[in-house]
Length: 479
Image (tube, rainbow, N blue to C red; front, side, top):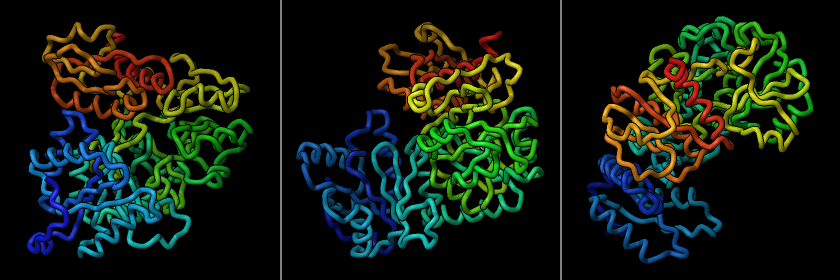
């Protein structure tokens, strides 16, 4: 059971850092992730004090019993509890800061683990630079508890470690090098978009053909305007609605953008990522950053720093580990080069949402269109796993094969002999998008003969998920 306000001088002398645990992480977990949580906390309690955060209003005694039982059975040692009334003026950040002060622990080495694999960490004082995209509390999201443990143990002073990597990354960008960094969609491999020799390094590192253009990332609209010749009214409307966010806009480019960025096309694809680490990297570098996904060309996109290291380790000057990507698939690309805007690649913003803002838009072009390479991600084969992937009508046909990995969307009563990755137990397309590449990579690393999946309903972001699955399976489907 929770041992409230226990004092143990030995522990206090040895451990100055605290991990605060939101109570809901013990309640909302499925049976499969409960064991992952237990193992994670058992590893972390060797170096950190664990403190349970309790919202004291509207507490259900039965939930207390459930949490206490979980902690007792899993042998998780809770050092103390922190009671917090959400309606009070003091923020949870301030309550945690005060707890650290009273208990002699170190605020800037403390973290808060919350439900949905969210980790928040803190800066002692506000940043001096008021234009910074970073707040005194910074939250990252992760795919698994193993990822959380790995990140925490490699970031002993979390906020300062992130700041240091950002300053280093910005310096590398300014000097013409490459930096891998997180966005809300996938991890990018970035360079100064105005430096031709720097951009060439991206193509070399990724083994990317010169005919596939890059997306340019900005942190403010004022940075975008010099890069384009015009900004149509409908494009402005989408920018005001969806930036920062997973929407890329294609416009006629100015002379500031080298032809290598756009594969000699007279247009450029630009977006503003919705990730404070990405935005701060752009701001600190003072450069628009050209950045495709940080993986070998044509293969599954990365949604963690570890994914980047697996394929591109050693090809960049620095990598900024910002946890997992919250959208999980690439941005929607929309072109304003025609009279009617056209979606060139489905992504994090669906067509219905766009049309609700600017009216009718055209859908993506056919794969054999002569302007195929005007946008990234338009090749018929892309996002591929090393293991062949098949799109099938009935996954149950493969249930007895232990050499086949299965991507499942929604619950299934079928027992599979091979490994299974659930994109979403609840049939949520957004959750499926977030987990897609992580699940594909996990199965791909198991030395299987085949991966199988079915398509999602063609609505919302499900359209983009299906686009990625079809392109990943193109070679096998064609054969």
